[in-house]
Length: 402
Image 1 (cartoon, rainbow, N blue to C red):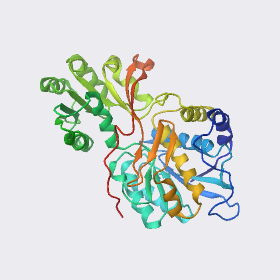
Image 2: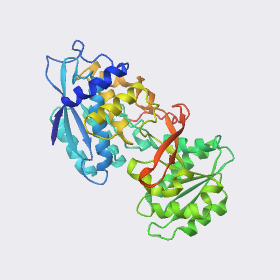
Image 3: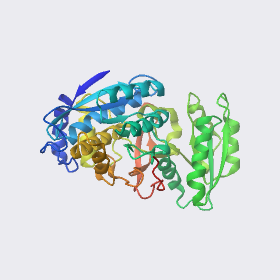
Image 4: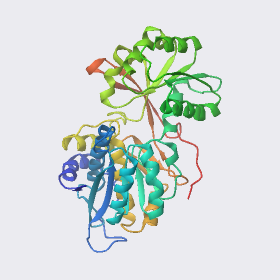
């Protein structure tokens, strides 16, 4: 376990905060409401400090600490109570995460935030409902967290918003041929199903080319894609053969004959595309500068950098989570019902732009982005093509479970 208070990090973020105007930080530091005395308020932060998703967990944690500094005006307090952040490492394992969460709840934590892993998020949501604590999921993208129960919220995007952003590259999907290129694995098949679920009802015809995960010669699959003559190719690929895939698609002329779209991952992934990067269209959840350097994004970037961190893909998920935690605690530090009510329908300025927690199912409505890469190798950098409004990528409303 690692316990951290918002000390130096909050003070470091204060300089950027003052420059940003603190427009959306609320009223942290005002008279107590729903609390007792000046006892610290414990907030549980659960993320992968180790394991396969440790790099993403680090981005989330750094964003969260910068967000607390921003949302509390550099004081590290809310309604006169010091915020005591208790961190736990979920290691990317659901069983470990559940054990950690139960430990935090046993310590009296009423607010739990975090996890990059969708499988873990789906374990924590019912636990939050059973114990009537506030749970704010992190970068976990599964659509199933939206509407999971009244105690569960999210601080990142969900898969529907990714697919809707990809579909935006062909405008109105009606009558368009969309092909999903993926590996024949649970991950690949899930992406095929997601594209069919999102773009199918909008009139798109969705097909797929699935390659065995063990395949190293990817030329035949690139040829199949070109022969299908789709209007849009959505690539969902993971693993060591990614570079070979992009080379094959480029050599077979796929990148020059149709619109090829994939998700823009973290900075470390940019060199994978090689010289093909400038020919690929990227849907983007976030990259530094995507928010147009609005005041909140500037505060986030400065706060993370001044604390010795590096802003990246999931920095906003942590920063936004901290904004949501502080806003909830402003309503009460002990009454979960009051916290839930405070967040439902809340509209605020986040690092990506204007965001809103949809009251009906707790979806986080937010902008998404279109991007391309300039340069190649270590010099590759994303360039913003367009911002998509939250309405353009909003998932359909789901009935609230539980």
